[in-house]
Length: 165
Image 1 (cartoon, rainbow, N blue to C red):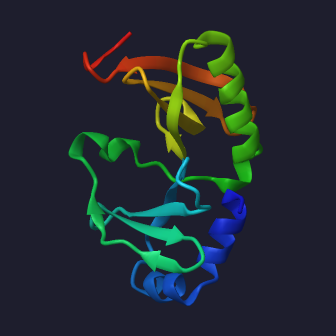
Image 2 (tube, rainbow, N blue to C red):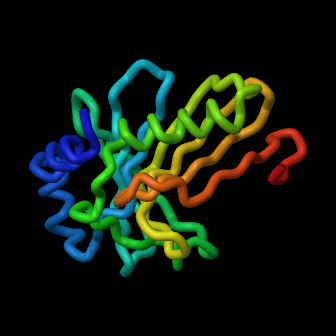
């Protein structure tokens, strides 16, 4: 299921429409998907600027809503709305591009899990934020522009040392 299909399915569900009646000011802020766990689940988040809470819906065979969560205070300025009409690059295309970068720049990495978030970051705009967790206890983070497919940023963080390499 693509991100667009998941959002369309969610927003036409009774679970969402019932919730939206009491949360009309809330807006779409992210779509999250984890790979390597054998499911096709999307987690889709909506931010309410009046309460500073994010409501996350899980879209899988069934649609469920998680408990609302607070936004970290230092991240409040980063809760930008997603503009789906500006997303031209699919999650599949973004993941393929990130895997090319992984193969070219991080050949020694053995990936054990990966996940991606479609989000609008204040500093660089709308991106597919893709993270690969490696057997070497590092994360490789690659941000792909959701409109152009261009790599906007890439970095490696050592989980043992807790710093960027």
